Image 1 (tube, rainbow, N blue to C red):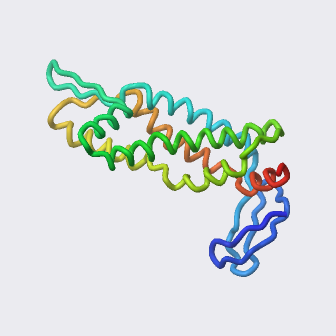
Image 2: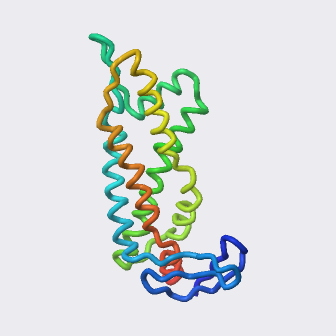
Image 3: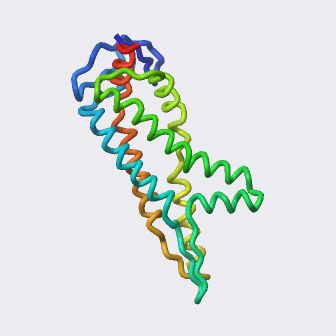
Amino acid sequence: MHQIACHECDLIHDIPPMPSRGAACCVRCGSVLFRAQENSIDRTLAWTIAGLVLYVVGVSFPFLAMKNGPISNETGLLTGIQLLFDQGIIPLATLVLLTCVLIPLLQMLGLLYIFIPLKLNIRVKYAVPVFRLFKHIKPWSMMEIYMLGILVSIVKLGKMATIVPGLAVIAFGLLIFVLSFALSAVDEHMVWEKLGEDS
């Protein structure tokens, strides 16, 4: 039996095991507490692995190329962060490093650490702290804001030079959607239930 608080009225409920696609509603205010998801483990793993592939491409390949006549400059995500550090804009560089590089990677590695053992029905140490950390850092992934800034820069710099989006831009854009699908596939109630059985 698992307990959950209503997001609207804070009433505590005892939640029994739920059937797939079942939903639990608050007995006081009627709001939906959560919905059980079908094939949550398989879908989460599939989206997360796809996200890791896109992440490697996004970090490894050039992000943008700027051409002005015979002069051409390429920049990547990590080199852009390094330039911010070199120019002394340390708070912004740190923010971009955390929200666009480290936190998405921690999210995906955390999901793999939790869901691969769940798929194989084996126990791993520190699964509960890792899942708690995953829940705490989830709001701090802000890749879509960084991507919006890139698009604004492309429009503004397009008047001064030819901007050629690199493979990393496509991978990064796809990663935003793939990671969103992975996070939405996580059935937190099922995870807590299984982790509670293992502890």
